[in-house]
Amino acid sequence: MYSLKLELKLNNKERSRLAGGGGFSRKVYNFGLSLLVWSWGFEGIKARESKGLTQMEKVFTNHVKTKAEYAGMKQYPSAIYSSALLWNLAKAVEGWRQGETGSPQYKSKKSRDSFTGLKKSGANIRSDLWQKTTKAISRKYYLITSEDLNSFGRIANSKLAKYIGSIGLYDCSRMGIEKQALYGTQVEVVDRWFPWWKTCYKCGHVQPIPLPKRVFNCGACKNAISRDLNAAINLEHAPPDRVRWATPEFTPADKKMPSSLVEAGSKRQFKRNA
Image 1 (cartoon, rainbow, N blue to C red):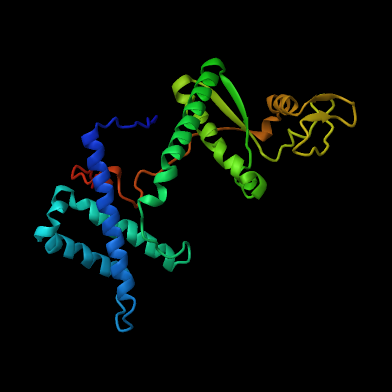
Image 2: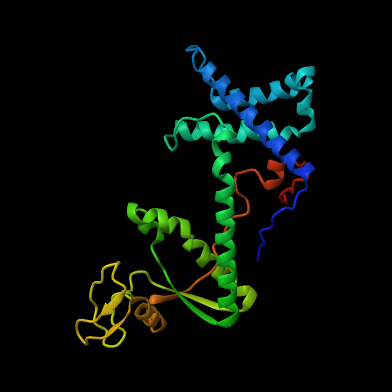
């Protein structure tokens, strides 16, 4: 299966409506969080947060939306405030209770306006670059050999985390693997424990080489070659027992999370077969 990620081209009216829906969801989230914080001050109340959030949703449906001062809520689907309370806020509280995240914070529009546009623009440029690069490689070569880099281990290094994380190496590898079925290519991945970067391609001598050093000088045969070119030659002639065929990552379809239709407030939701 090959999937496509599309971007909606919206007019000003549609953009305003989506922005209004996001603001409505943010206000409901903050209102629900304030009620939860207020209820925690009563020692006699021992009800679970999930039950309290369910009751909040019923109050919104049966009482709040019926008042004249909140008539503007009727122009937005009820799934918006249901998702804000029963999904977004519930997951935030659950993560806090389990010690996975910090305490839930109030959402603010102004806190991200200054850099959201620039961050999205940078992500789009990076994605476009990897798409064009992997497409050009897939159309030119049939057999593609890649190194299995330990990206997560390198990100753990505080000196490299900022730069490696922003490059998106995983996305490049994923796009190349997913294009196999489209262009008829075959992507092979060499075991990360195979010392291709510190092995001389001429004599096979293995020696450590610091990361800043870009020229590989063999201590045995005195061969001097670019570090990257030496690694590429070793990858091309890697032993068969160190090479595996790369397959696309399997993503389960039945995740326990709302679909895009639910988040958008649509009633047209696909039901699983009985």
